[in-house]
Image 1: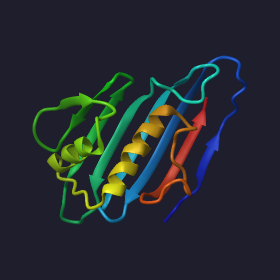
Image 2: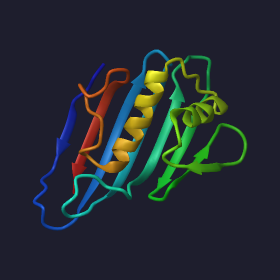
Image 3: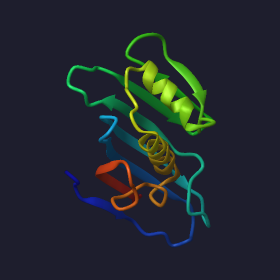
Image 4: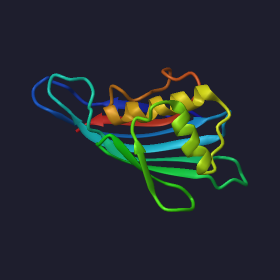
Length: 154
């Protein structure tokens, strides 16, 4: 079920603009969900941020699977991740390719059945970190289902 996607705010071009984004997507073939919360600042005269931070959880929707990966973005070129077992780790972000994200998800017990869903998941994460203009909305995805998006400037 797709819920209302709302993008609100006003960019006047005068000064920096802080943003906050909450979004949930589902990968129907791979049966995982992506839930994220990001914040950041879009500098004056720019459309996108390069310092977004936040949290994302990618979780299996398969009834008997308990796979998940938690990602913490700190506005640097690295992301810290937590898997259901083992110590936290970090890796470069954005990853060099979608295969690096696939490996992380599989280590976390989240199956990936579609390369297209994987690439669009990567696009959704990077877009939300870039701010409201980068956030994927309903009609902008081909493989992920947009459940809910609230992206706004503050």
